[in-house]
Image (cartoon, rainbow, N blue to C red; front, side, top):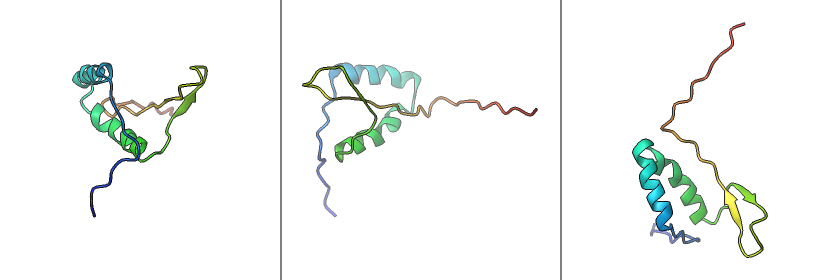
Length: 79
């Protein structure tokens, strides 16, 4: 099967790349955590919640991604 071209081209800003580089020092898995979101966007799938009030010329979505570098402790109530 030939390599498929993405439906959407994602162009990362220099600020985003710098922030990602800085965050990757603390959170080792951040790149692999965001990769599935980037792939979904490239396939044309809209993910996240739309943010309104930005203006008519921009459509902005907020996407939350689980940080697998942080281990969340679950407390069970034994009462």
